[in-house]
Length: 196
Image 1: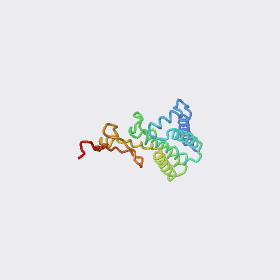
Image 2 (image 1 turned 180 degrees about the vertical axis):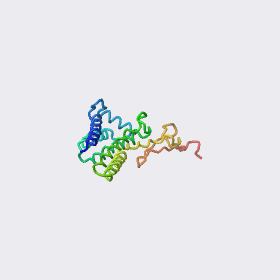
Image 3 (image 1 turned 90 degrees about the horizontal axis):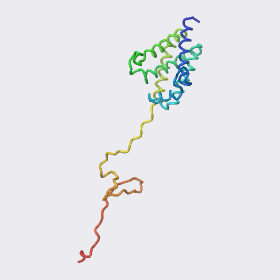
Image 4 (image 1 turned 90 degrees about the vertical axis):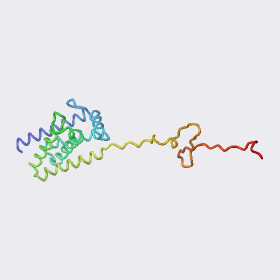
C-alpha cells in the first residue's frame, strides 16, 4: 500500500471515528447523543434520537472501515452520505466558506474519499460511492421529514356557523354526532284573546 494513500486513509477515517464518538458518547468535547438529538430536531431530522444514533454510528463504523481499508467503496459511500446530508441540512445555505459555516470542508472530504476509492477500485467505483452516498442522503432526508401539523379547527367561520352559546341559539347534537347551530323558534301559543 502506498504510504501517502495510507496516511490519508488513516487521517480521514480517524477523524470520522472521532466525529462519530463526539455524537455518540460526547468524546472530544462533543455534544453526546442528547445534544446531537437536539441538533437533529432543530434541522428537521425526525425522529431526532434515531437520526442522532444513525449519524454517529455511520461516522464511527464507516470511519473505522475506511481507515482499515475494509470494503472501502461501501465505507466511502456511507461517509459521503453523511457529508451530503450535512451540506443539504446545515451548511448549504451558508455558501462555500467555512468561516461562514459553509460547505467547503464537507466538499473536500467528499473529494478525498472519492479519490482514494478511485485509486484502489477505479473510476466507476469512485463515482459509484458518490452516487450511492448521495442517494442514501436523499432517502434519509425524505424519510426524516417531520409529520405535518394537524389542521386547526377554523375560527374564522361566519357567526351563524359557530357555536356561540348566546341567547337565541342553541347547540344541538344530531344523530350523526355533528354539532349544528340552529336558532330557537318559539311558536306563539294560543291565547284567550284569540278565541273567536
